[in-house]
Amino acid sequence: MVAFNKYTYICNYIVAYLNLKIMKDVLRKEKTFTHSIDKVWNAISVGEEISKWFIQADFKPEIGYEYTFTAAEEHGGTQIKGKVLEASPYTLKYTWRVGDTEVDTTVLWTLEEADGGTKLTLEHSDISNYPAEAATEMLGHFDKGWDACITGLIQYLKDEISEPAH
Image (tube, rainbow, N blue to C red; front, side, top):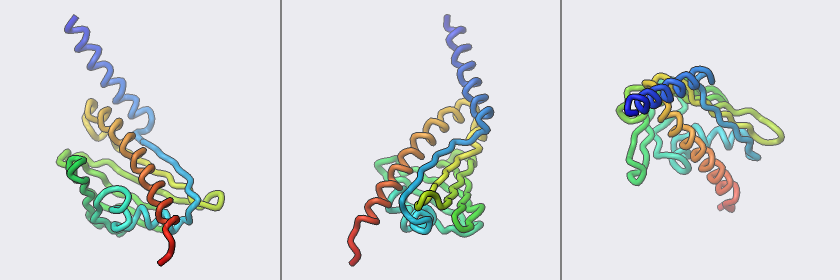
């Protein structure tokens, strides 16, 4: 019975890892905002704005910039580091390394005007760079994390637009 459980456990992780490969190793989120493309661009690309709705950010949208995101202590104080690979109007791509994992993944944000607002697409790829068991676990963490991130962005943009001009 113990051998069967071990075998089942191993098989489940192999299947999950292969599923990452089959889905082309990309976690994808999409959201359409009523806000202008420039407003959404600034929210995802300017360090001061990122720090207001997502995570403390030492970030500049400049190719080659080595950034650091630092989670609040109540969220473990984890650091995420990486390098900006692309930063053209409405496309932002950077590597993503969690803590001391020494595993790089890639995050890509793209914006396009749509229906009088802005369509945001977020893709997090290369998750299979983690070992099989860790890749499955990280996929779950990234999926939940990006959902929370998008929710934070929605609220931030709603609050920013709602504030009266001073």
